[in-house]
Image (cartoon, rainbow over all chains, first blue to last red):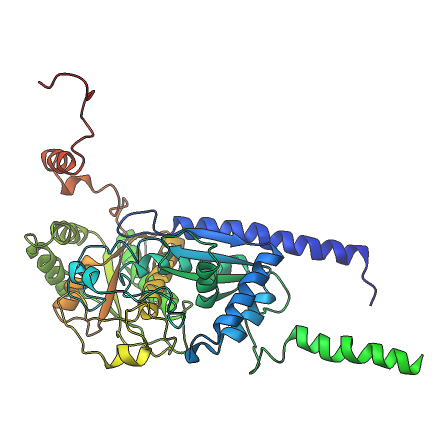
Length: 226
Length: 215
């Protein structure tokens, strides 16, 4: 199959579409409702291939930090196929409870909640140094659904990964006040990289298939039969 | 003679819109496998009771009282309020620590702390699912051209009155009023009230030059 000029052009335009879409999704997320003040959520578009790889690599290494995080290895492979990642933060959930005594966190009042000792950042088996303000999670939800609902309308494939948010936090890519973060992978491809994921995806994926079947066997075949 | 009047069509349309909003919430993107979301639509009597209850909380929460007063006003034109709820426990097994417990198991084992507003401690991702559903419902209302606003106060009141058994709740109010009633709600605060509160909250706003002599 020849890679024609027109196909190369399509490949370039496809990536450009993802970049444009990401900015529109950022707009939708930014203008989604907020409760309890603003400067709560920020959005960060990660579109450089090296930055995406940094995040994916970090997600992979974090998989060993906690038994429950085995699925991080799968997340990393899915995100390697994404065109870009949008990270959503919550700047107030850690430091600034909403002060409405809603009891979602279970401490009855925000004052009691703030007195409670938080998990240590150094403890790598903990993702978010809770207890966080649970009421503030509403803002992340609105931001996230702002992105998701527009992505659905635009026909952009998306996947939501809290592992990516955590990786962004640990890599220092996000504002320092961030207490909670989630990532949204964006893809403009014919087959969504976020659906139909086989088990052991970290072992069996586009890259390993290409490596094992083409890169490994085809040169050997050429060497022997040429 | 027309078959149906505008008033009846608007009312019927609103009922249909509410169904579509709950449908959108049901199908909203969420974390984990099957969602455990619940939703109820209050009838007229319940809405009035909920509004009066919120209004009665004036001493505790001026905001709840304002929203109660506001809800009573909304009842004069076609409107509906959907209360979404979910249970506080985590089925995800993420062990992320955001709730303040080291593992999901610990959170689920923790004693439920009941209050009028919510029963904690709640899983943060469950709260995300709940509010994303609310946002999906609101987004649907927006696309249908309806007036819409998400309320915690009214949902807390509905929970306190026992209309919703869930641990965590959020309410989505939707209206087919002739003017968007959810924003610029000046009439619920008098000018005097507004000025008093503004001066209390931002005392230095009207301050003149600091170097000048005080009157």
